[in-house]
Image 1 (cartoon, rainbow, N blue to C red):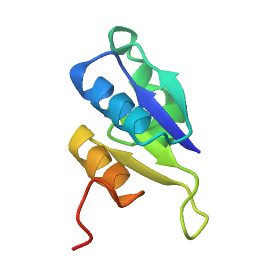
Image 2: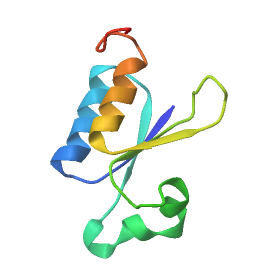
Image 3: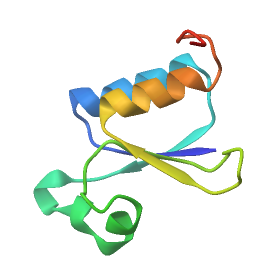
Length: 89
């Protein structure tokens, strides 16, 4: 399961579209930037720089949750999971 921490922006939509395209199981956690919800201590524990979107993958090979932030990094990370959208090398 992947947790998607997002806002309704172009970058937030990119992560959502990728998760849908890959048919991965995920939960959405929405934030209001105008209220500064991305600076909530619970979110800062996941991403200390408070950037959105952020994903947390709970199904890693070592069993430890992995947080990834920044739309480009998220797209690359998600593209590597099924091995369909990025080359193996």
